[in-house]
Every structure is written in structure tokens, then in C-alpha cells.
Length: 288
Image (tube, rainbow, N blue to C red; front, top):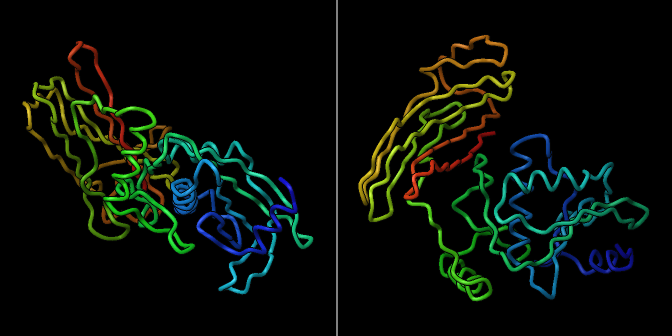
């Protein structure tokens, strides 16, 4: 990365294609990963084929003084790639560099355009990342695209790549998740969106309490269900009514509100396709 080019970006200040961050997000926490992914998605959805975007870490924006603080360490490219591979779809094209400015080491995340945008989150993380949102940058801040803007991006994508059809006969997802220390329920919904019955539907939810040595609870919610065209089914349960199991066989009898601040949910659904083959759909979400 040319130091003169980075210097020119910093001296020009923040734009929709240049973002300054004082320090790295905490990439060891789900909350930090969610914040990082949201910013990358927002940048990825505004870059063009002619202009990449840059997130420069180690520089304050001018509203907060504009100081060049530098960074102690830049995460490896492999770590960034793994997080984006887990939390985004399609995965943005991102490169991570180090650069020197004002005798300080900076981290530079370069986000470049590709034909598969817009980009979405594949996991919900507390209040910072949502699978229902398409993030963008407006007036140098992270915002959300409006429905009409999303439609324009999708139409442009279809023009480039042809119409992309989702062949899954089922809409599947979480309807409700617990809140930390508050209302507690896990609810899922499955809907047949085709004109033919879908058979042999099984669904389960795994809950992993990361801060309790990866204690796991698995709840079977649907067994051998058939949904007729247009039919749907909702199922729910309370995690506090169940037991969680450690990998070594120990049992955690969980009672009371969810108190952990790092919880993974995985909805796993299988069904039999028209060709007779068993198919699988997986949905992930996180709290914390």
C-alpha cells in the first residue's frame, strides 16, 4: 500500500468511501465481531468498480479531534477472512494492510467491488448486526438501505448475473430469541412456499453457552412433519426449562433467565426434496 496514497486519504478526511476508527473492534467477542462486520458490509455496499473503500484504524475522525493514535497490532488476514466467511453472504472482497503515517503504524482494510453485491449478514448479533438489514454508508456513518434502494441493487445484480432463484421450497428462520436478563423464548417458523407438499421435515435448535465451557442444549422441535402448499408451523420453547450438557458429560441444570452474554443458536432443518434426497437448511444467530 503506497504511503502517499494513504496519507492523501487521511488528509482528505472521512467520506462514504473512507472511514476512520480509533482502534480495532474486539474480535474475540461476538459483539465486536458484529460491529466489525456491520462496518465492512456498509462499506462493501457503497464501493464501485472504479472506487474501492477504505477503513483506516488508528485515526480518529475530525469530530473527535482527528488524532493519529496508531495500532499495536493488526489481525492477520486469515482471521478477518474467517469472520467474514462466517457472518456474511456473499463474502466481501477485503484485504488488510499496515501503513505508516505520522510515525504511527495504522491498519488499513481495503474493500473492493465485485459483481455479487449487495452483501448481507448471515447472523444476528444483539442490537448491532441484523440479517434483516442491508447496511450502507450515508454522510460518513453506517445506515440501512431502504426497500426501494435494495430493489435497485438486486435488479442491477440480476442484469449482471441473470435472475437468481432460490429453489428451496421452505422459508425457515428464527421468529424470536431471548434477551439478556429479560424475556426468554426461542421460537422458529417453517413455511412451505411451493405448490407441492414438502415431507419428512425435521427441525432442532442447538444452544451453546460459550462462557460455560461450551455447554450445549439440543431441542427437537419438529419430527417427520409434512407441510401442504402454503402451510406453516411455528414452534417455541424456554431454554430455562431444560438442561445443558458439557462435552465431558457433566450436566448444567439451567434455571432462571439467561445470564450468559455469549450465546450461539443454530437452527438445523432437514426435509425430503422432490428428487427424494434429504436436504438441509441451517440458520445461525448469536447474543452477546
